[in-house]
Each structure stands twice: as structure tokens, then as C-alpha cells.
Length: 585
View 1: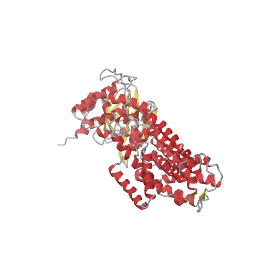
View 2: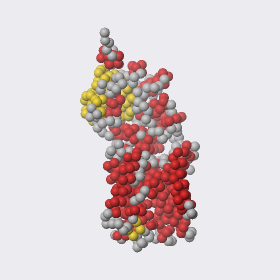
View 3: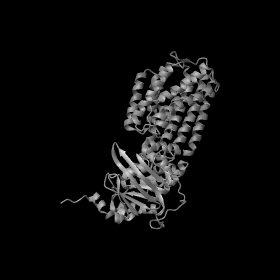
View 4: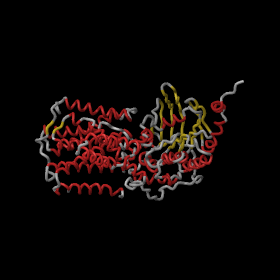
């Protein structure tokens, strides 16, 4: 199915399933389908944060429970019409999630298992608060007297239709996020959060937004489920069943596909019913646990991930090669560009300092980068070159000093704001987003850094132009792991250029390349400069440095040692001493 037809397919399937209650089937089918839809909503909503952004949460039961108790309290104790309670259930769950995330996401070290444990703790904290306040108080909340909205021919069918509507909304949200600029940012966070931030992704805001959507949908499902069970208690609501079950369902179906959790939810619901409906309930739970173990070991990407690897469903993931349009500003070939005199200052650094636990990596560094030039940074290993790039690009915060870009002080700004201001960089060791295609790796930079393109389609069109420029267009649908070192280095270049930056920071892009590959890279760098991009070039390959750079700055032990024309600097006694040492009699 064409990716753009998927939303229509989801809505059409919802309408068809909505007609089932009017066929007067036995109530059993409505209850069974209700439970399948219930788990689809919970698993898919969990996946928006944990699957897409990679922040594995065990706290989904807390946000589900918040929705349960919000609807139960408003309907049973304050006599609200039940349908009116559902938006409040979603809102309360989202507010709790955002409140937790606003604190937790500020702490850089809270990732992985630490985040999972913190979210699990939220479940027990919320259960304690609800159980020891008038919200519950101990005996639970009864909803027997709450009238079921008359949406279908029977109360059971009405509950089924409400959960069906929630499932349709959840699947549409999951699909829309997966195929959006927002979703690409979440997947970049999943693969390498620090690199995503440096490429312009507002990681803090995006994680909060994903958590808010995830919690709101869980709260909506909880609100409907409160009326379904008609009696809610903290022990039954705030337990490990919900988080563990949704994790199993999502992993089985595939966390990187919008439909993966839904497929896992249907499969597990059917298995649970098959075993619990017979005489082997305990055995059934064991079988489901075994499925989880086998899935993790032999199919870690889930069912949809396995199919995607085989090429099935690539169109549904929007992976088709974009149609190429003529570039709005054709790139000149090497040597065709007209170099302008480098006089106007683009970047001015004053007194920049950076320390790591008392060790001064940069000490009172001041320099200028002029528009249109290639400035070379040289120095022995550990002299502060890469630290300089990391500080200027926002990867590290400076301890002191100023960094002025086009008249704006960007020192201390978040890395994504610096990327938006017009600075792009490469990494000494390539850091691609491992589970995103080569095309989408570049599209992320095109969408978020520099001028920032508004959509995934626009980002992919721009990305393809830069893949053509770096001779990687034939690898557009490959994963970065399928590239050799030379190609990964060029992928770094393509990502840096896709935002059309004012200044590119190249950190040892020639390291590890063969002489032939170095010559190819040198030609590419010339082409980049010839189109008017300013470059700061950190490199140890001296032939390339002398051939490319207009000026050199030499670092030693975190300080500037020399600055000037390349040949003058390399003949400086101080520079020769830093590189070769001092002779002793």
C-alpha cells in the first residue's frame, strides 16, 4: 500500500469494524475485540516514546492509571457525563508525564536502564498518593451507577466503539509521527542523541512532546477502561501487568514500525485468550514468556522489522527514492567557483576556555575565521583542536569566553540553536544514525539545521542532492553499517552540507583514508569552498593541509601557538618544536 493511503486505510478499517455491533453478533466478540483494541492503544502509545525515541519506559501503567482514576473520579463522584471525562483523562495523564519528563530529561545521565527504573518508580509513587487520599482512600471507586454513553445497540457495543475510536486515533498518530519531521527527529534521538542535538534536533522539547502524546493516549485508554471494568482499585490499576505486556507486544511486532505494536498486541491477545479460555492458563503465560525470549534473541527488530529487512513494506515506510529535481543553485565543479577575498570576519572567538575536572583543554583561545576561507587547525594529539570544535558546535559548554557568529554571541547556547544559526560539523569518528537509511541521515540535517525544511519529503529531496554531490546517491536506501570508512566519511560531509551552513567544521575527515580516497576528499572540500562555504579544517595529513588552507592556526596544550600563512607557520621554530621536540646535546 502507498504510504499516503495508509491513513485512509486505517479510517476505512475503523468504519468497517464500527459496523460490527449492528450485525447483532454475540457480545463475546465485542468484548474480545475490545480487549484487542485496548492493548493496541496501550502498546502503540508506549512505542511513540520508547520505540521511536528509545527512552524505554516501565511507567506506562502510571499514566494509564492516571486516566483510569481521572474518569472514575469525575464520573462517579462528580457526576460528569462520561464522555466529558475522557479529554480530562488524557490531559491529566499528559500533564503528569510532562511534569516527570521536564525534570528527568534535564539530567543528561538519565537514559537507558536508569530512565526505565525512574518511570517504574513513578507508578508506585502515584499508587501511594491515590490510595492514601480521597481519590481512592482504600476501598476503590465504583462506576456501577455511571450510565454508559449510548453509541451502540448495547452497553458492551458502546464501550467497544469508544475503544475502537481510540485505537484509530492512536494508529493515525503513530503513522503521522513516523512519517514526519518530528518522527525523524525522534529516531535520530534513539540512535545518537548527542549527534542529533548537534545537527539541530531540539532533543529536550521533542522528548517532552513524545512523552506527552504517549501519556495522553494511555490516559484516554485508561478512562474508557475504567467504565469497562466498573470498579477500580489501586492494586489492580497500578501494577506491572500493563508495562510488561506492552513491552512484549511492541518488541514482538517491531518498535521501529508504526504498526508493529498493534500487530504484537493482536497476536498476544489471541494467545492469551487461547490459553486462558482453556485448561492451560499457567502454561499459556509460560509460552508467552518464551516467545519474548525467542523474539529478543532471534528477531530483535520484531515481525515488521524482519519484513522490512527483506524489502517487504518499504513503500509503507516511505522509503521510496525521491524524484530528483534540478538543484535550485547548481553546485560548481572543482575550480569553477570564483574565490572572494577573505576579509570579512564570520566567526570571532575571544578568550575561549574549557576544562575537564581541572585539566585545561582550551586556555584563553582567541581567533578569527573569515568568510569564504579555509582555516586549518593544527597541533599534536591532545592539543585542543577537537575540543575547540566541540565547544564551538555546542557539544560542550565553554567555561569562559565568547563565540561570535555573524555578530551574534552563540557561546553557551544549546547545540541545536547553534546548528540553526549556521554551524555544521563532522566527527573524527563518523557517528551516523545506525538504524536510519543513508538518505534519512542526511535528511535530518536538512530539516533541522540551518534554514530548516518543514517536512520529511522536502528533507529527503534536499538530502538526495547532497548524496549526489558526495557520490553516495546509489547508497541512499542502505544503512550506514553497509558503508565502508570512505563512504561513511562522505556521509558525514553530506550531513554537514545539507543544512547549507555558513561555517563547516571538518574534524579529521581524511583520517584512515587511502591516498586515492584522500585525493577524492580534497576535491570535494575544494568544491565545498568554491560554492562559498567557510571551512575550519582540522587535519594531520600535511599535504592536504598545505594544498587547501588559506591560513593556519596551531594549538599546543590548549593554547594558540602560532597563526598565519601556511608556509610561514610551518617554518616557525615554535611549531617545529611542538611537533618534533627539542634537540638535546
